[in-house]
Image 1 (cartoon, rainbow over the protein chains, first blue to last red):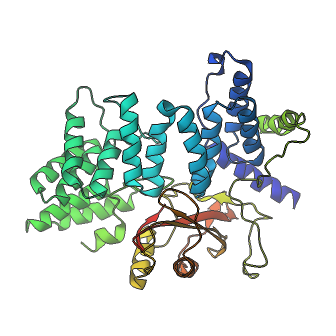
Image 2 (image 1 turned 180 degrees about the vertical axis):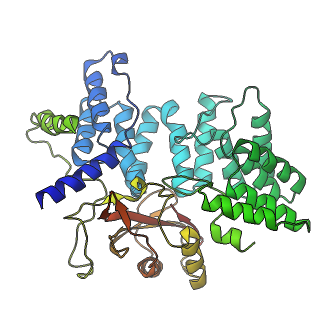
Image 3 (image 1 turned 90 degrees about the vertical axis):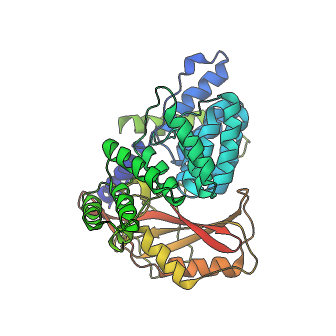
Length: 265
Length: 170
């Protein structure tokens, strides 16, 4: 039984360890207690979600109540485990202490975990005041946060506004396209019945990363136009079965399409 | 693993100076669910010992959840029921549970919050319907890692808009 416990504990720790967060450079703190709080928090962050880790964050907050990262780190396991009430209390405190650092993350989480489109847009608007023209990237690196803002407007059925944000962003100098950018714009055009523009973006997407959902939408455009769509449908299903889909370990992507939906086209 | 042992030994030192302050008691792992004979079905068995369970997102290619027919199957099942709340509730109902190594579910826990993320009294009838629905889902895929069958924690969050489920997460 002891070996059994050890085995599962090691699995749990392995899983937790794989979620470790970024380390903060504690030498930037001149006040000793806050430097110590930072060090405690860094160490505790490696054991995310464990009771001793949560207690360590409490200790960090106790000795340096203005240390925002301790609130942030303490909040993360609640988010991942679906306790959004506790998560929000803690992340709000982190945002209050350091909005420049945590607003973008809170906005992303409100979108990603709760589809709180209005709340995310509020946070993005607030973040824009600190970083005009540059909201940064989502925590998982999949999206520029302007793309997420556009997705939120799209979800609220403000398609034109979403298109406007994405068009502007994609034309900006030195913009680095994310793995799903063209697809999201393509779907927004599709839902606005602008099929030429939609197809144009799906084709661009194909050159970056041609996944099943993108091929499915190309197939849909063909079907609407009474063209042969079955080859594309087959290719979409094949890509799906090969694992070329929109992936996220925590939640599902916006505009994710499921295998059955492709099969039923 | 060596570092882990250090933190286990060193962290208590940090708290040793606290004499009369109250210290929050946390479960071994945030979100652990402990069997409660008053609400939990006695026949539900964990395959792993005690309260251990990995989190759904720790599973390789978890994609949010592991269900036969994917999340789309859950969405379609719920649509068939056409559930709604006469109270026109808006907010979220999250139901967390354990999927055991046979794909069976148990130890369900509910949290309801309003659109401002504040916990609120459950819309009893509606949350009971969603709980029953969640309990009825039987397509959960059991997990094996390195040949060992594991229990895992999963949740479903129902986003409620004007008394109807508008989205299911994660």
